Image (cartoon, rainbow, N blue to C red; front, side, top):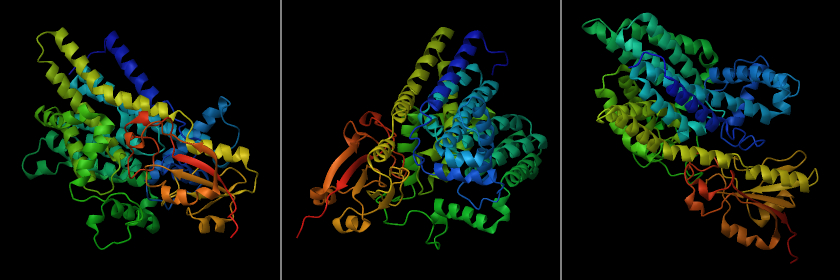
Length: 549
């Protein structure tokens, strides 16, 4: 490892890495706005954070820990005051601005994730340099700065990237514990784990690498080594930290039940007698169910990591995990233990979303960087080693960087749902009733109703449309299950539908754009060239009277 200060060239490289990370995470941060439902859960988190602003800290909400909601509120309180100084927000308290300017408040909440994403890159470089040297630090930083799934999720007011920050912080602090275990170090790590759990529950899995670090650093012998005091301190501190930051999860029975329902939803196979998990009802939508125990692991390898990190990093990840163990470097060993245990637990769930892998991506990229640097040292000369390391790092970063840029280019353009809402506001008088068709299970694909316009959901048939009393119809269609207009039903109604406006995001064949089936996110995960902007294909029709007879 290297203990000296970074050279001038290395400081320039580090600055460039941080700038790239910031650009990719803040670029197009306003995607989809003022539409509040661009990403599932964002609008819920936005308004949940309004509860503590009014003095209500018992949230009765369990999808995400209360600590994350409190942090979002505190971030918003500080942010709105800062923005007001520059004239970017009007006067008013948190609650007033939330009701009058929700899009600006959501943008502020997203900035919390973007900042956390950049800090994760910085922290990874710092811990990698301390433990594995300058070359590994810069290579790992470059890979994470350009990583697609980490950059993408840094755009969302959701806790996945904040959890990844907690994971990197905890693993980095575990390395000294693995060299010499003390209860003070264990307590510090436990406090960090508790805070990470306060962002997202699965951070509890960090207790396993914490125990491994405590065992590695223990000077005890026999059975005492298996249960070192530093590990106990870590567990107690994690529990105390989590309890202190999310107290209502423990003291409100209704909230506890909601938290338990999340566990049942994510791992239904562990609760075979519970039939109502609170999730998508079986058969309600055409999302394929996991056909076997291995389906989750195959999905996360073949989709989440393959598109999230890129093909080459995904192919190298197994070898990097092996290198992490045989290297005997504490941070590498602990990163391997954390990544493997997390993958095994999360992959066993039939709830499949690529963002579930985001928290461990920094660790996988750290291991890939470490293995790459170790391989580059086989070069004959220092110059050859630097050239080899540079070429390999650029090759590893090429695909995820291209995906990150393509995603942000698409995200920076006006969403079709926003275009449709603007058309309705310009062309229809207040008091107009509009029938919305195409919605399946949830309404993330729907354009928002402008002020004074009433939207009523309907099926696409004459009887249903006539029953709404609407003279206008908005149809939204997309490869995602949540926006579905059947061509046959549309053809049947063709004589009564006069197309008034159309907003189509597709510039190529629909099948060329790869979307995540279970996530109502209307930007591709791969194949960005097939779309020009976010959103479903929206068509606005005037509903003509039924012909006589």
